[in-house]
Image (cartoon, rainbow, N blue to C red):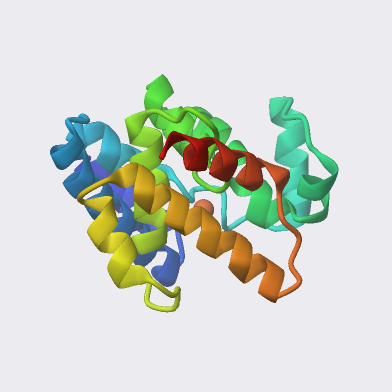
Length: 187
Ligand SMILES: [Fe+2]
Ligand SMILES: [Fe+2]
């Protein structure tokens, strides 16, 4: 684990590395609470944004290389929407990550998906609420929910994300809406 942390410190910019550490440690705390392997949570946290440093052109190139199919909305927003799918392949390819659960958590950390594993939920939530995050609204409520009922935290994050994107006239990936519909129906 120490090796991976050092590698990520070398490969990510200072700010992204700080965020990455925040996600890894927040995920490890949640993993301990929800009975998930802490080492997997740390690895998924450390690797989740490993492809976020790439520009749009590189992301699209890597999608082609890894055979990732791209929707129209993803093609228009490659870095923000595709760094997670590319990141999962890149984590396996470049960092030797072999664990399918870890790779799935990286792959789905941006939009989530219906019926996520607990590790997927943990990385999704940790990405939003790690200690370095201070701009999103309702962080106090979300952090409290994350440690008491992670599905409720998930719903709140998805609602707030959709609201934020709409308020900024930013494009919404239908995958985010599908995740919200699924988890709203579970409450
Ligand atoms: Fe990300
Ligand atoms: Fe992130």
